[in-house]
Length: 100
Image (spheres, one colour):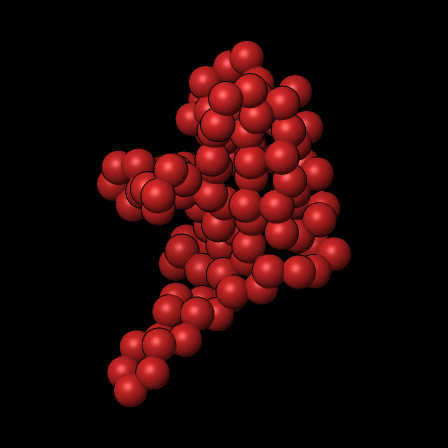
């Protein structure tokens, strides 16, 4: 689930920290032009909210999903993410409020 909003005045990493998100891994995790942030709901790291932030010109796009557990590897790769759900809408609304 994603939303595009006007680019905020504050620094994105500061706004994400206020919303209780931290950069993914030790440094900023980039996928293309997106920066990844996570908000773990338990000490073990999963489940967690996972948000990619893309800043282009005068807009910021927040791309949010919910990771139930870590990826599964072996014969097949499986990602255990939820991309459409009312709980995602509620968390995305909370994030947008943190950006204003």
